[in-house]
Length: 49
Image 1 (cartoon, rainbow, N blue to C red):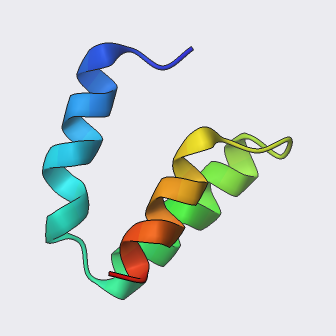
Image 2 (image 1 turned 90 degrees about the horizontal axis):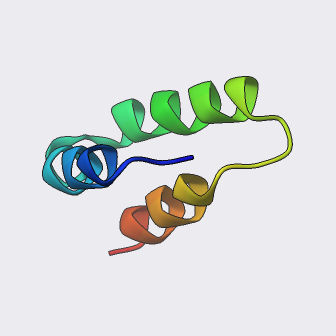
């Protein structure tokens, strides 16, 4: 379960992350949640902006 404060934190930090940091976050989520995590798509979509 993702808490509202975690969503707010992601929204605040994602614009400040460079590509390397976004890749690290995505890979960390993939390790922790091998079945997938909803933030991965968000991180991917942000990288295309």
